[in-house]
Image (cartoon, one colour):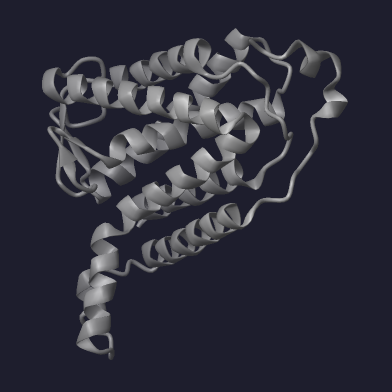
Length: 250
């Protein structure tokens, strides 16, 4: 239940807290990797352009490998930072429980969606977004965790005393907006998944909103965030959205 003490005595919630060494390393790795990804996206650097670089074959092979696996690594780093943030805002055990719920629900929903077309519309995943588990890439549940958890923390940072329903609806709206920005990049540029229709079906966005609202309203830890401000949700969303926009506009 949402902490009554927190609501009555908001001064107990500190604005920021110093991160530990693991958090600093994880955040630094994400920022560096995301910045490189954004630069590569902005300047349209591909395996073909790398082949023309005056570098050794070993270095060229390394860059090619980064290009092939870079998006999956970015999601993994975003997931690690999101979980570390959740563990600090709540407690490690609470964060693990929340993460397990999101990962299992996300995989089940996506497996059903890719197999039957419900609830998002008819689509299928390709092998371009990391290793597959059945018909769903392993990175997809991680991405769900990143999107939903950071949406929740952004809402709690900006509107800390919203009711549970308002909080869930605002988080759902953010998740839906995120997916709307992601779709052109993921489908037309990266080809992570393919829709049977020529365009993204509107039911996809309706489903995203409803599902994210349900997850936040009924499963999110109700203990309010301990720290009003933390860079991680803002930086994770900022970098990934910037990459999506840069890639879709090229």
